[in-house]
Image (cartoon, rainbow, N blue to C red):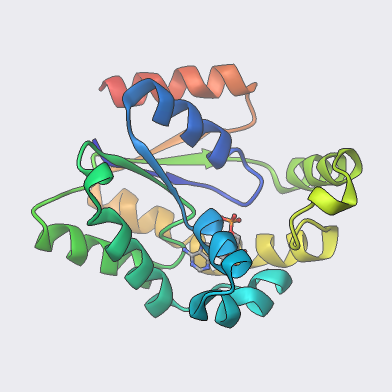
Length: 191
Ligand code: AMP
């Protein structure tokens, strides 16, 4: 089973992906985490993307599509994977479709977690206040979050109608308590 979790930054995709991963023996592919690992390791890609990530912009589609193509070819993805943070542009979505078709794979579910922006800003303020400075992500600050939300609205939200037109999209209320969102997600994947 292959899934995409869609939704704005800070909207709970990562939390829900981890639960699904544990319940269904799926691999969580968080492109944000993969990029942060590349930055920490000082790889060629890491050096290229650090400044973009720190300001909340998007890394180029070429880099992202290559990164996901390599990752889903690894054996641990054979039982299925959850994409968390990818695709983030309509071009990435189209490239993903082509890549999957090539491998004889498909996405079984594309699930949007709908979240209110004002609530996200409140959540990030709380997270920043509760996290010691040394442990904070470089992009965990209010200014960058505002940029990331604007980028989501302009470049990522158009993916929602892209998948709706293909008939694979389900939208859930991401404002519900974590356990309730998790229960709704389980109902969707149970079919
Ligand atoms: P995230 O942890 O998913 O919020 O991602 C952190 C940052 O990594 C984003 O603000 C982007 O700069 C970058 N990033 C992650 N995934 C993608 C993607 N699919 N396309 C472009 N940039 C990405």
